[in-house]
Image 1: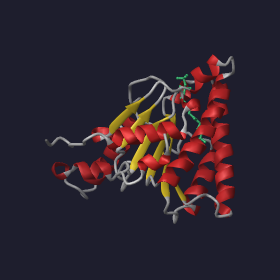
Image 2: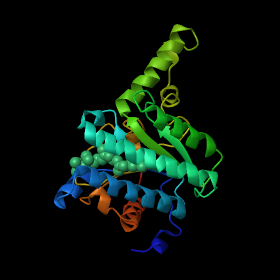
Image 3: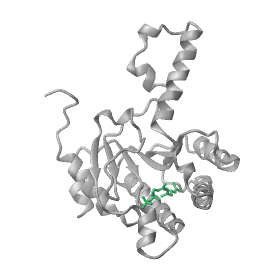
Length: 243
Ligand code: FPP
């Protein structure tokens, strides 16, 4: 598989990835689950940079769901440390203008996340706001239902204040109060690790997304696998409900 095969194709503008299988990857090797997340974070770095290199406009990485707080505290703490390490590294590279033109956004609830992580995310969002190569959405403390609820509450507030008529609420109004307001919906959603479900990931935005599933565990996912998923996507015909 070579990158050249993608040349001339109409690539997906927005790719969402559910980074799954870290725990099983570690177990297979007799390692702690946290080692799987560490390996997964390295693959995140690689795939994110590669996406920018091949001209993807936006990538969303599902890193921590609103349900993941139910995991053992030690595992949650280890994942938070990976976020901390990455944010520190990204902020340092951003200062040196070495962050490859990546523009970062948190999609998820700040409330509930450790204060230092929120601070570092805010800094990265602010300092990378003018970057144009690729937008990176970090889905941390993210849940699709929670996001829709957020939007509904905002619209209900507007209705109560008389700023909007309930009957006149449109799909665009709902979309414009999601964390992804103003962004294109994901064209392609990738889920490795042999699971065939969305797990509360971008459930509003995924209405017309193409899906690509594979048995590969996330820490084994390579740039060749991303090429394969994109090539597969490019061979499909999207009809958006038409004929
Ligand atoms: C799901 O695999 C994975 C997670 C809940 C954590 C994902 C986090 C990372 C890959 C780290 C990301 C880091 C940065 C810097 C964004 P699982 O643990 O459910 O795997 P399993 O199904 O095999 O148990």
